[in-house]
Length: 317
Image (cartoon, rainbow, N blue to C red; front, side, top):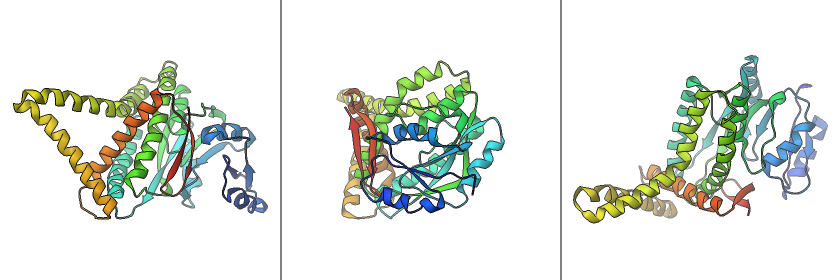
């Protein structure tokens, strides 16, 4: 216990957070409140210099840790080549259509992270549960997310980022497509804000494998909504020729209709098997597309106020 330092870093919380943290002061829990509104990254940048531990573990406002999390995360640092460790986020789902789609997506994410670590290194960490060697910590711009920045910093230093399956954090899944859409807009703005930082960082990264992974996994995925929109627009023009040219556009329209039906089912509380995946696919791509438009118009994400499924996004214009 004498090696564990716990800090509740509050970015201008307006609820009972400060009182709750102070109630644990007799057990060594400290409260850190920077002046003004910094966002999570900015708050952490100011909080880290007050820490004394060799390993830094970062969490989110909504995550609930399994009791063995710290032990599982820290064990990986016995390997000197490891600079950062990401834990596994497990979601509790309801029976709604939107939650079905998110569950399918998460099963893919977990499998991908396993494969990514075996292939080379992780290209992202979970903001809700990850750890970094304190001596390797590098402050990041306040409008960027640690999820993406920390693995880049580790690669620049010649260190790996690994995935720890047994370090579990429990979160509540978003139950409405509208909540998922808002989240994806916020994530999209941060992702596009990160691209210039990423490209500049890769110039000083001597790891071709990491560069390949981050471009193929992250960069192309973030650009996929733009490519998808371009595909639909081109297929609409070609559909005017008729015949087989109309098939791609018809398939696109059919996909949009199915996603719309899934959204209506979700609003009505009707659980139709199979509707979750097309609805989730359409929601995240639309969210990222809107996020791109807002980013190009100068929008930046400073932080957000989580409310167990509903988040209020705060942007810097």
